[in-house]
Image (tube, rainbow, N blue to C red; front, side, top):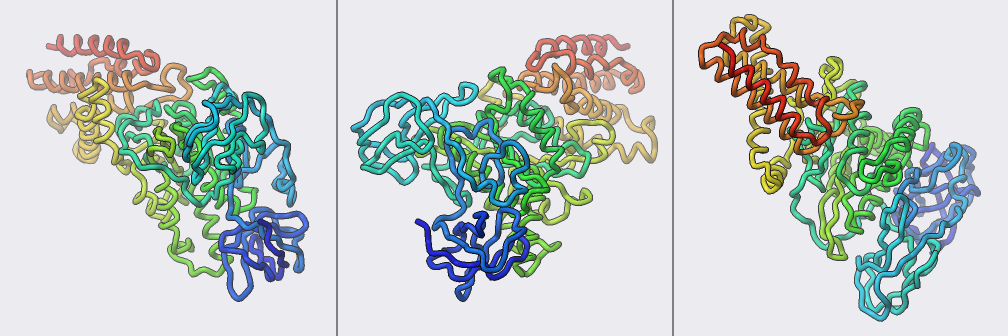
Length: 574
C-alpha cells in the first residue's frame, strides 16, 4: 500500500530528513526525489523521519517529494537469481556502472519467462513449504516453487505445464495467489520447522581446513587476515570446490578491479559437478568500494536472505562475505552521521549484536516442507594493519564456530593456504570426527589430534633450537621437528594452480596425514634402535613431500605406495 507523501527538509550525505510522512513505520522503505531513490527509515521523532539512502544523493534538494512504500527493505526472490550479478538490494547489474546514475536501478525491468512443471494436481490441502512445481533453471538446476511462508489451506487452482513469467499466478491457496517470485524483508530470518544438529562436514577440498579446522554444514567460519595473506584466493577455492548446491558470494566494499577479476574467474571456472560454468550455480551480490556505502550495509542481509531462500528448497547453500570489515565500516559511517555515540574505534555500540545476529542465521534446519537444508556462512575479515585485536575481528571470534586465521609470515614464506595453526580453531571437530567414523575412517580424530600436537610441539622446540642449535636436542625431539616439517610441506601446503592438488578429497587427505604420522613413528623406532638422528634426517623424504602433486584429487593408493617406499628405506637403516 502506498502511503501519503512527504518532502525533504535536509540532506547529509546518505542521510535524508523528511517531514510530512503519515503512517510510515521504522525500517520502512521510501522513495526520495523525482529519481525515486531508495531509502530506509531509521529514525522517527516529532513528525520528522530520518532515512538512509541506498543510492547516490547528489542533486537531491530541499522540498523534493518523498513517498512511503509501506514495507521494510525487501528482496525479490524467484527464478533467475543463479548466474546473476546484483547490487546490495538485489537489483540486477547489467551493462555499465548504472549505480552512478541516480534512479537508474529503479526503472522497471523486463520479466523473464520460465518453463513451469506442476507437481501433482489441485484440490488438495497444502501448507508452507509444500512443493507446487519445478522450473529447470540454468545449468539444469531444479528451481522448486513452494507455498510461501504463512500461507496454507486448500489448493484451489494450479497452473498447467508451460512458460510463465515471474509475476504470473501459478496457483491459488484459498483464493490467495502464488506467483513464481516473492518479496521478503532482508533483515528478517526466513522461518523453518526446527534446527537440526550439525553433523557432516562441508568438504572444501583444502586440507588445512578439512583436516585441522573442519567446518560442519550449517556452521559459520571467519577468515581474518591482513593484506597479501591470500584471503581472496582461499575464498575462490572454497567457491569452486566446496560440496554445496548453491554459492552466494557477497563482494562487500572490495575494490572494483578485484571483484571484476573474481567474476571473470567464476565465469571461466568449470564446475566440477556439472562441467559447466561455475557461475551458473552462483549468485553474486556486488557492492564495490565506489558504490553507495549504505547499500554495502544492506548487501550482507540480502545475501543471507538469498541463501535462506535456496535452503528452504532443501539445498545446501554457502554464503561467502568478502569482507565483513567493510560492512562494519559502513555501520560506523552511518552511526557517525546520525550522531550515535561511538564505542571502540568509532564503531557503533551495537556492532557485536549486529555480528551475532548475522552469523546466527547460519544453520542446518528442517524446512517448512519437511526436508533438510543448510546455510553455511564464511566471512572474510580484513583487520587494519593485520591487528587481530581490533573490534570486528575480536567480536567475530566470539560468534563463529571456526576461525581460519591467515598469517603474514606463512604467506611471505610461500606457504599457501596461509592458515596458521596458532590462532585458528574449530568447534566442529567432534561432530566431524563422528561423521568420519561412520564413513569408514575411525582414526581421523586421533590422527588430527596427533598432527596438532606435533605442530605445537615443533613450534615450542623451534625457540629452543634458536638458542642451542638443532644438534643439541635429543633424537626424539629432532624427529618431532622433522615430522612437523613433513606435515607442513606434504599435507598443509596446497597449490591452487595445481591441476592435481587444487582439490583434495577426504580419502587422499586421510592418506597423506596417515603417511606422515606412520613415517614419524618409524623415525622414532629408528631412534629407539640406537640410530643417530642425523642418519634419519639424511633420508630422502622428497617422495613424501612430492606425492601430493603426483596423485590425483582422491587417489589414496598412490600416496600409500610412496608411504611404503619411504618406510622400506627407514626400516633398512643400520
